[in-house]
Image 1 (cartoon, rainbow, N blue to C red):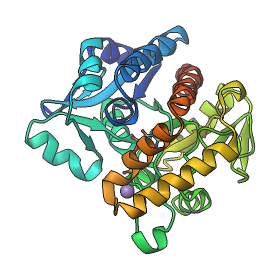
Image 2: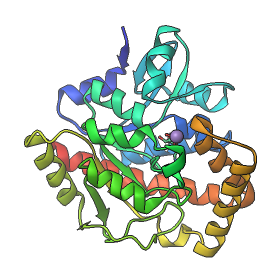
Image 3: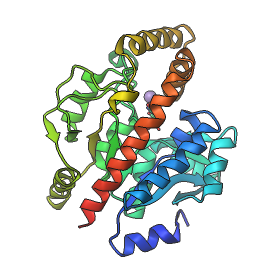
Length: 300
Ligand code: PSU
Ligand code: MN
């Protein structure tokens, strides 16, 4: 038994009721305890308030779980040494019956196994700066190319090369839909200077585009880019300076591979004295509100 879908989630899916998937890397590797647990539980609450059933996804004793209990979420937030699991790690973590926090890529895989169509997170992985030399491109992008799940996020962090990330997504046929914006948001900031092709003005417009994609059998995901609410956004000069420093640190310390993203996230958090954590939490809440509404429209 590789998959365990919680009874409430299962029932909702069987009755064509809206369900929203949530990832666990953001809990175990993206935020400190106890804010990580508090945020994860609040996100579930927001999803419910907006008419959908939340399904937080992770790997527990080698089983892919879609719909953790609050106790399990607490454990993901507290326990040390839970592996960050992307597509290539999944078979090993499962066969060894370990615990694993799922990245965007792996959360999409498990959501698709369970039949969940909409997934809410903070930011996706992408093409790293200097990927021309390092080949560091997040497995999230290949998952978006192939797996039929819509991912609601606040864009991607400027720790990445955002223009190259958009080019990659174009090549692999992944639609990037701006919610009430024509500019790619960059996580802490509303702006990136990069224009998107599509500005969508309602959850229904987004749900219709997702439906059209999959009804035509166009395989792969959709990115819904939802800007952080203005009152919680960080000043661009401030955050960009911090990101530059974090990138220098990573280089100096020889950080590479799967450690790069968690290292950069932690460095940014540290250098902004927790200010970025506040923004991070608020943008996830904002994505939860939109994601639930899209899931509701999708089920109509
Ligand atoms: N970007 C963020 N916050 C995160 C992540 C990315 O702003 O928590 C996490 C997500 O789980 C994402 C993963 O799927 O990092 C990407 O890691 P990598 O670059 O190693 O593929
Ligand atoms: Mn990588």
